[in-house]
Picture 1 (cartoon, rainbow, N blue to C red):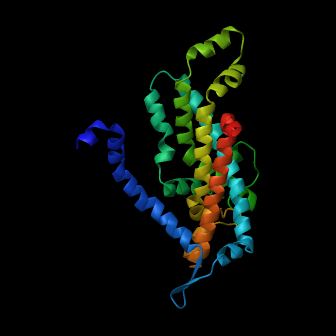
Picture 2: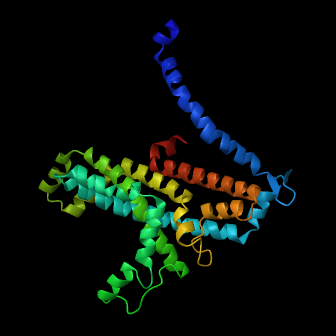
Picture 3: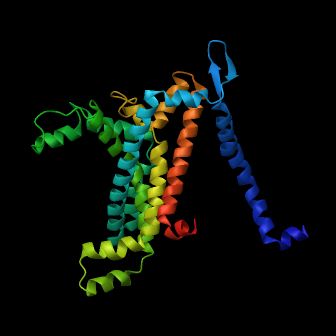
Length: 296
């Protein structure tokens, strides 16, 4: 006990031990089980498992649906990250200029984030409805369209429509992350730039954004990971259609596991997704930290 009392490092490990046990049970063990499962195949007719080695990964390489899911996921990730960053930065800048009721506005901004996926899906299905949707009604009144648009009926429009819905769901956390970064930037820097004759755009580009780079890096990384794993709106709103245009890799894994009951193949696809996210994260961290790149 005396050693524990005199050793803050040991006390830290002791306090963290319960959390580490929970993480091991909830994250590490399932991940290891999934890695083992990727080398087995389940025979639903005979209700047994057999070791197949790398056959599941070979089957993925030969599966057109898998490559389609990867390409759809690429579009999905780029679209989500770009829109979430743009919208999040705009909202963060707006919050940073507010002096009254800032807490209230921040709470309102977080509403999409705390809303369930089902609520978000229902709202956007109503907005996108060809006949009863608000979006078509507004565009018609503005004279931008002559006839209703079936937003979820064509591959390109369906992808874009789901990206918008997912952006609305996830942009609040990006906005709050960037807003927190803006709060740490001394106002004297912006005031000095204004005195020197810089306009708002120049101040944003040459003062605010460079100072905000660490927060932007965090927001982009989190948005990328969320986008790779998100498929709830796809399964609720389109089921992956039309023509698999919205079948991201997460939805592909879900269908293989629970529609085809090919758990081994689904586990192999999950391993590919894990490696892909890990690779993107490592590359991004290397690019975002030039010093680390030089050390490497």
